[in-house]
Length: 122
Image 1 (cartoon, rainbow, N blue to C red):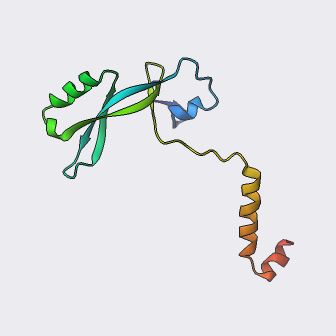
Image 2 (cartoon, helix red, strand yellow):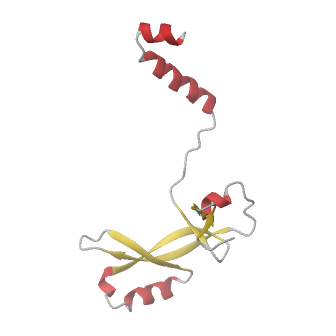
Image 3 (tube, helix red, strand yellow):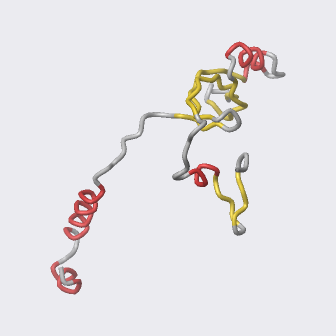
């Protein structure tokens, strides 16, 4: 498996896409420290990297040429020790898609005029 991206039939495919349906044995959630750059407003502009050791991350950020523009924060990564995926907010999974399809269909049909409904046979 590639480190970041792989060329498949002339196009780039994201590593996450390659992992869809893959068994994730060997992956664990780890608490790490991110070092990132900020702009004049203090807004994060770019992630520099993720460290297992908080003190190492802080020392790295403090010893950069423009240390004032580097900050650290704790994050959670799903990792196998070689690659990591940033874990974010909890995601609400919609497991009743059949009901959603009916709701969307009804909303679409409600927008049709009687003439359009007749043409479509609905």
